[in-house]
Length: 76
Image 1: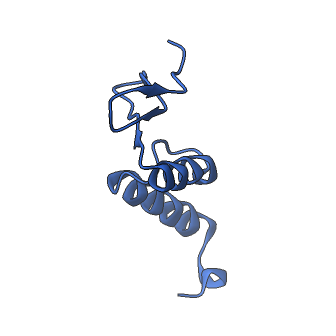
Image 2 (image 1 turned 90 degrees about the vertical axis):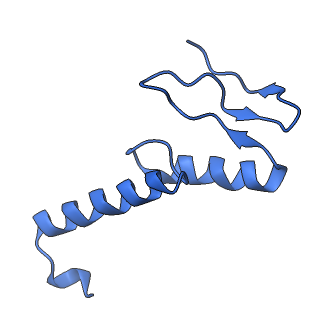
């Protein structure tokens, strides 16, 4: 696929589809720019931590260690 051949609308639809798939795979947590979420995912895998996932709009923690210790708790 040559991205230069796509219209602006097609590029935006592709971007949305990619973000939806990354979210489904639990690699990113938001539909914002995925760089921050992807970095968190890489760190969590490297340190053996679990990411905190949003329930509605609230995220209870950023990372959870294997012994259930909260790391970097997020404010309400």
